Amino acid sequence: MLTFNNEKLKSVLRCPICNSEMDISYENSATLFCKGAKKHCYDFASGGYVNLCRPGQSGGGDSKQAVRARSDFLDLDYYAPVRDKLCELLCSLLETQKQPIVIDAGCGEGYYSTAIAKNDFALAGFDLSKFATDAAAKRAKREELHNAFYGVASVFELPIADGAADAVVNIFAPCVESEYSRVLRDGGYLIIACAGPDHLLGLKRAIYREIHKNNTRADMPTALSKIDSVRVKYEIDLNSNEAIKNLFAMTPYYWKTSQEDVKKLDGLDSLHTEIDVIFEIYKK
Ligand SMILES: C[S@@+](CC[C@H](N)C(=O)[O-])C[C@H]1O[C@@H](n2cnc3c(N)ncnc32)[C@H](O)[C@@H]1O
Image (cartoon, rainbow, N blue to C red; front, side, top):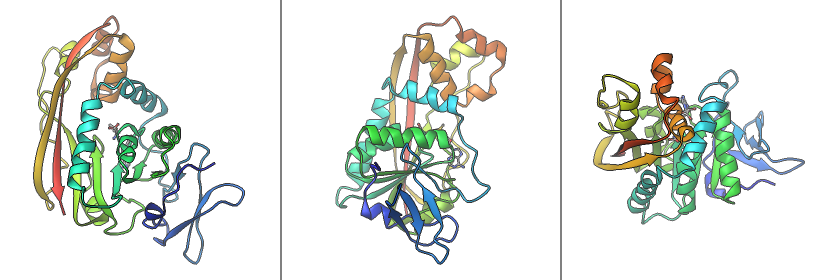
């Protein structure tokens, strides 16, 4: 049985092939179909997500193992203060709207987006990884969230109507200003999570001999107006090797670190590290 059931969100979904409006058919199994002449169809997978990639576009994004590591780590709630601040910002920015539409671009396995949906937003999460999108839809199903939709799609081509979104959130995923701006209504908000200068310094200390603080992201918006910057900074203590390795697997360092340095994590059972996340808020 399909958990997603939200008319407002359904009305802003667009066919990735012909850009027509979409509807859901419940005959045999749940299917999204477009109202265009060719009636393109997209079946809901058993987990509750839909693959809305254009032909030839599927197959990228995070691997199954990376998604598992992220889920296992985030479920420990070390990032709860980051998640809660994001929800608080959205609630305050959109307090006058009735069930605002929020897009999570590069939603991963749904830790942030399901929390957003619990605040009575109409939430659509998109990720290029089918493993991530599947995990996110399953999270929403477990939480019985009828107002959360998950699709496999690139953040460069979101299957959403122009000007439909009240907010776009972009949490440690590629930032594509032109596309986020296209889907935002005038006056809508873009919230981007960036690693602050001290983010994960303790983890870096455990691996590298020479440590550098984080620089500003290179893909930040240039045309939208920046209205605020909110920093969430605290420290955490991890007390298992599994949690340390899962945290490491969530970071870009996972791909850049030599085997010799990665091995330094092998005997480590505790780690003290900084969490430093900056939400940059833009308005269209
Ligand atoms: C570092 S993870 C962050 C996931 C999630 N926002 C979080 O913070 O838990 C980056 C995510 O971006 C996704 N991604 C990478 N390139 C993408 C693209 N072009 N379109 C959509 N998602 C993409 C990856 O599959 C991955 O799930």
